[in-house]
Image (cartoon, rainbow, N blue to C red; front, side, top):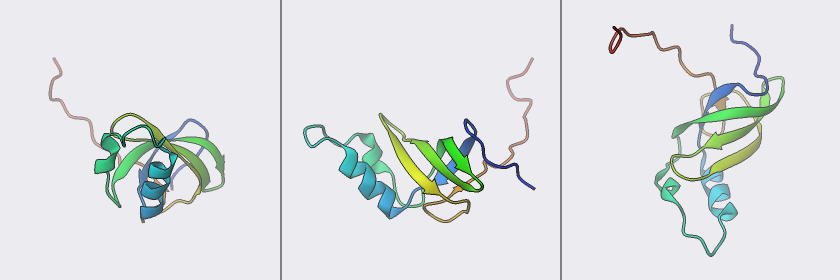
Length: 97
């Protein structure tokens, strides 16, 4: 069982085609599209929960490059346009003394 999402938690978000259109629409016309133009549908990016109601959340998604993407009312799942918990990655001993 996963914990309930709450404000400040880091989750993963899978980009949808609508998200990419929304980001491009938010960019001022006088500024070139940043390196985030290389993002594709289905890319998984880190996000911070800014508001949660059950499994529906408002997210601030961190893009690879300058900028973020605010996405309200996103539901839990693994499809594009949904958030999910990051996988648990076992600790390694590499680099430890």
